Length: 119
Image (cartoon, rainbow, N blue to C red; front, top):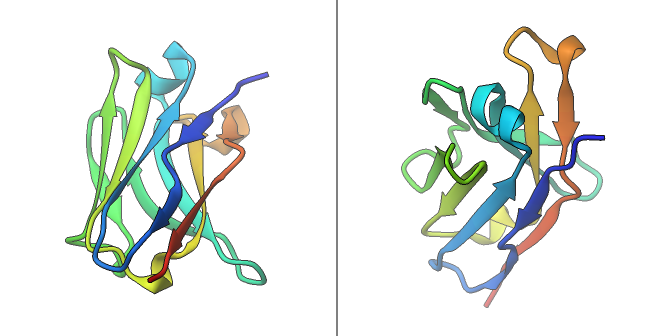
């Protein structure tokens, strides 16, 4: 069973920063497309940011210019640097790994980490 382990969530004031980490098994971290999603209770899970094995990134419009996704293959870890946080960024954040040939070949999720932005 593949395990993705997230860390770094917490409570932060508006305008503050947090960095989320997602540790994955070596083969997953190096070749899978990795992503961060978030979900608010009662709403659908939404993509926040994604990064391919080659380093191409994409972001939700709501976080562009504030969040940065990156990967460190040597540490088998993907990061989400979140700056200028807003109350509407409050959610449970999930790490996801998808096989480059598609989810049918592999699609894994972490357990989620809570991010709360509040004064």
